[in-house]
Image (tube, rainbow, N blue to C red; front, side, top):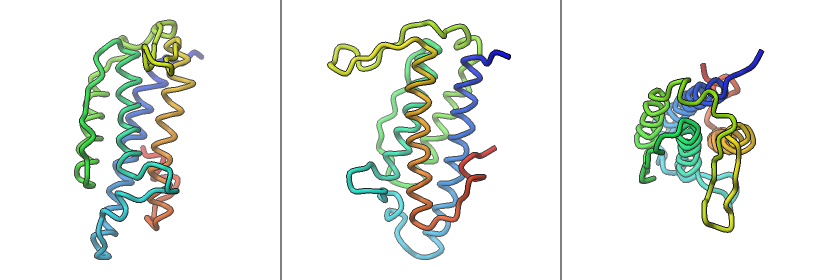
Length: 168
């Protein structure tokens, strides 16, 4: 059985962003109930040289929409990264899910061999085929940031488990 490029991308991004949204909802409730500032979780990080929770979510969203748009040959939506609250992060994820829902299989399937160039014109310019971009760059980057957001919350006592991480 051959898996399509679309099946390996958009539905995966949607599942994991939905799960991330649910994990964020589970994080906000205890913060409110226990009377501590939600900002303590929003700015939390696993180590001082790592990005905090808000930035991890923003980057996960960026990779989901960027990878999907590049593969589909459409413009990548630009979001200004101004989120400061759980509600802001939920709205960001909702925007990304809406964008991802607009992409159809026929826009991505068959694009395994297209050329995708990241950071063009810079010393970090990298060239990929569509398939290698998704499998060796886009998905690993996306999963790193989703997993790190989850780990930040779990490390800070939010009661989430593998089922929460995986989503529906």
